[in-house]
Image (cartoon, rainbow, N blue to C red; front, side, top):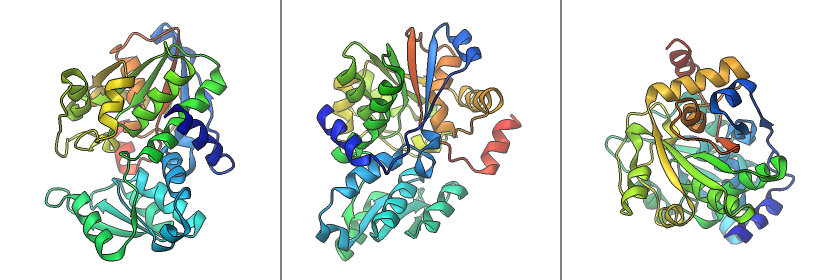
Length: 314
């Protein structure tokens, strides 16, 4: 799998942004360690998801590309697939919840995707996607449970190691586990002793429970402000990868997530969505003891004005 991430980086060269790494003296003082923030909020479409979407879609055959691509997403993966489709002249269909953040919905449509909205309280997005796929013949590129998507996501950490040289620990948000799996494989491939920790909201702790019990757990429509982590469970591919490569899982409260977004905004002038701030929330709340040099993946910055106002007014 590490070789797949290395190859994905070559494939992404010239297409994905090489995102910056920022530091904060205040954050280092709080943590008692050097913290390096990998700013995937500056990636194309505002999130790491572009990496996995481009890597997977660009590998399709011409016949597959001609039939289009379909996926389901609460926002960031949908935007990424839509943009890649626009870049490569491939028709895309995105199944999105009707309550998805307005900025994510609007951007997905602007990239030219056919957006099919659904009610997450009544319908299963996977079933909708499969039904359309059977009828129209598109290739399904799921948000996280796909080897080429996982490899693409891992390139963010591979890039981080190039920028920082060596790391003792990496903290990564976890929804469906694609980013966490790719991060862990990349980190262990570069430095086998590097500790990799996944971070989830307390109210969406299915992956943490799965990791600690060794049995796949799920949670349906968790009421977390971190909308990118509302996936019901880890996937068939990501669950065993998390068990094999990840060292620990921790959870943070909704208030801790909000404070992390506030810190990044006020102290570092960074716009980071709640899902993207989970690693910083774990540091600020002291849910983890950082290594001397700790990398934190800020996974995205796609937050609408209503949510940001709610957070800043908190």
